[in-house]
Structure formats: structure tokens, C-alpha cells
Amino acid sequence: MWNELDVVRDVSQRLDTAGLEFMLTGSMAMNFYAQPRMTRDIDLVIALTATNASKIATIFAPDYYVSPEAVRDAIVHESMFNLIHEDSITKVDFIVRKHSPYRLAEFGRRKHIEIADFTTWIVSKEDLIISKLDWAKDTRSSQQFGDIRNLLSTGCDLNYIAHWTEILGLGSLWSEMQS
Image 1 (spheres, rainbow, N blue to C red):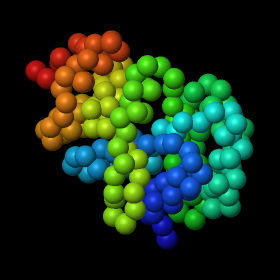
Image 2 (image 1 turned 90 degrees about the vertical axis):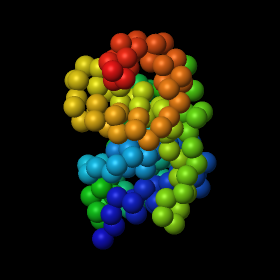
Image 3 (image 1 turned 180 degrees about the vertical axis):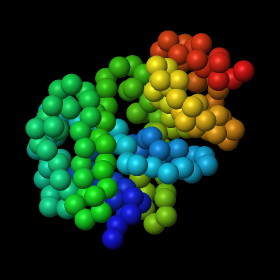
Image 4 (image 1 turned 30 degrees about the horizontal axis):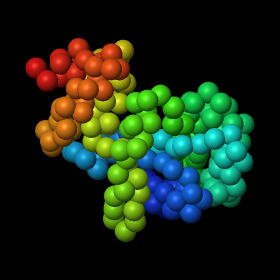
């Protein structure tokens, strides 16, 4: 039976082989950078265009369930679709990369890392913090705030975070996190 790490390995290898750019984010990235916590799924940001829609179903067949319609819709709306590994029932959320200046900069800063016996791409620690601030701005989630504090305790580029949080309207929340 496969676990989440086996699925990350497999998905990373299939995307790399297909020449599709991606990066781990969310809980899996959190687990790489700081104190691990339980995850419910795997989150990936992926750079896709309309011409890639059918490619996704092809590269993951027959081991994963994916709706080609959901992929096409997510590309058009720069939203999300998911893939489900048939044997382990592990869900992978694919977040289509947005074309805003920040999201392009974030994707350009992704890092190539080694986990266990494979390599993959991951969001930078600073961009994970910014994303968690963005997720927490409406919900004020204590889990997100705890994750941010945990990430900050491991060191990061505070000037980069201050720059983008100001541009993204997250400056006051960022200031609150530092007090």
C-alpha cells in the first residue's frame, strides 16, 4: 500500500518526465521546512495551459482518477482540480498557477530538493509564509498562524516577505505576526 510520500514521488516523476513545471506547497512543504504535522492531502501548484489539459489524464492513467473536464475548467479559471491515486485513495490537489506578478515571482523562486530517494520542486519558505498569511487573512486560522510562527523560527528572508505582503495587502497581518 502506497503512502503520501510514494504518491509525491510518483507524481513528481510523471510531471518531470512530461516536462510540466510544478511545486509542492501546503502541508507537505510545511513538513519539509519545519515541524511536521499531519496532512490530509498533497498540494501542488502547476503551470498549465489549455494545450496541456489532455496530457494530464494521459500521464496519470490508469493509476489515478482525474476528470479531464475538471482539468480544462481549472486551467480556464486558474483554479484547482484533483487527482486521486486509485490504490491508496490519496488525493492530490493541483492548483493551476495564476499569472499575477506575485504568483509568477513565487513560482520562479521554487527550489529543487531531495526527499528520501527522489527529487522534486517545492515552494520557497518565504512564499509558503506569504501564502499562509493569505489563507489566514479571512479565517484568522490558529493552525495557519501556528505554521507561520513555526516557519519563522527556522529563519527566512524577512525583507522579501515584507515587500510582498505590503504589495498584496497583507502588511498589517504580517506586522501582527511579528509582534
